[in-house]
Length: 378
Ligand SMILES: *Cc1c(COP(=O)(O)O)cnc(C)c1O
Image (cartoon, rainbow, N blue to C red; front, side, top):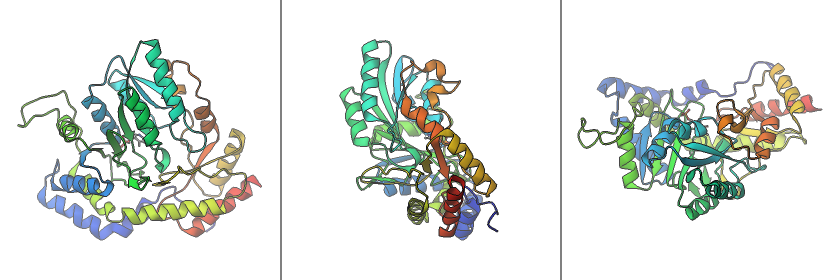
């Protein structure tokens, strides 16, 4: 029993908890057959906007498409510099590149892992001074469930008139200074990939904004840039709508989302209390509540991490490395990087390790993980 594998993520346990509501929602879609932009999409948009206190929510086909539509709406493209953290998922950098813009990598805070506002200001100043690229946008990522330092990012972006985009793919449901994320930047993008805190049964995403103009543009862009009538094309858009079936799944999951966020926070506190000394717990962003997408610890060095990861695997405990390589060192993006030093991102990539966290993980499971960590490091 002790060695039976522990799931990193337990979507089956969650499905058992929500099954009646899930089936009711899916059957409603099967009955009306409006698979594209059916009534569940509008209902979900309304509920998500209310949940995070945003004026507008637009459902889209993925978190990546949410980021892309937000940048397309600002006309960002060739010659534009888009500032983003080097320590994030690839999608954050891929989107500006797809639009012909240039990602400029910024280092992160060594304690919270969030984009470093001091380095951001220096990077914007350096790009402006060089005069080759035009500083246009900042994509702040709320990494691992915690919010980036939005008041600082917003102030720095404001100095240069840069557009702010919150990549909240991992952190929908988190709070900063009492408010849920969704209104910190000019636009907020989230993802409903199944492993995110609020996950669908396939791809999905959403955009949030306070601006009615931006929301209308996002709605147009997600449907090929269509105008008031279906066959009037106002913009070059994409096929980027949220599926009705995914919206139905998300409506069922939204009914238990707050309870799941609370469960994740309890699990994080158990880890904090039970992990042995020598394992650095995740530092908390001040005056914030994490959505706990990921519980990531730091080990003293890469060799210790490798030893721990293989011992845990032997004990049936899966772990993951987010991220083994910062983006400026990825083969696809290396050529985009101006050679600026990003030492924190490189150091984190060598020493970070994510432990299992999901709402159905029990206190005994966390105890088992922590005992195995202690045994491996002892
Ligand atoms: C998951 C993720 C995305 C992309 O979301 P998809 O829905 O998979 O396209 C973007 N940014 C970050 C930080 C993510 O973790």
